[in-house]
Image (cartoon, rainbow, N blue to C red; front, side, top):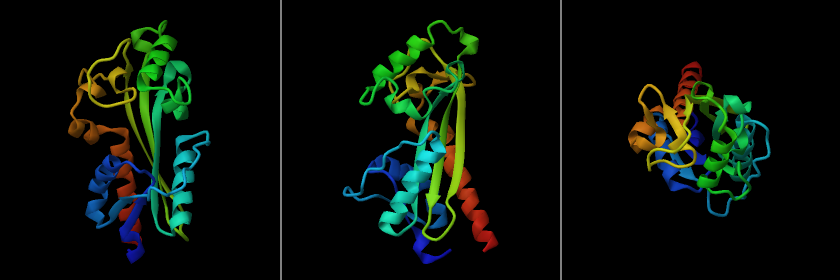
Length: 202
């Protein structure tokens, strides 16, 4: 691969996320780093996870003239026609807390029976490279929404999201267990495969 591609900018200022994603790109010899604190904030105003991820990645790639990776993810509940979707982080309002978002979700599902509470976490990851086509990869994690939370780990909707095959919520898993099966991990694995295929064809 071209030398410029060995350094990858991640559209986040969260070092924890950088560490998680570096793990996936290490096998390609790519070094992942967060965008500078001075990087402009990108408004996530698209109607899909992919749209937001592409917008963030392409704006960062343009701003810093190097490859940039961005992800957008959230929860889709079937009984709510896919809501909260792209509004997952701000479902109960622009600056809503995890607890407020969870309370709103529980209230909206109050009349829905256990068997109808199917949901999935969705992650879209976009890789933008100057002068090349933007790549997009997806990952999903299927589960059910409980009537009340369980577990103290994780964040967001994790305490309400039950993995039926494990009879545990995401908030009851260790970080290692969660990262091994998560929607983001699946999307990243898919992205790595796309890059390997590109490399073989070049």
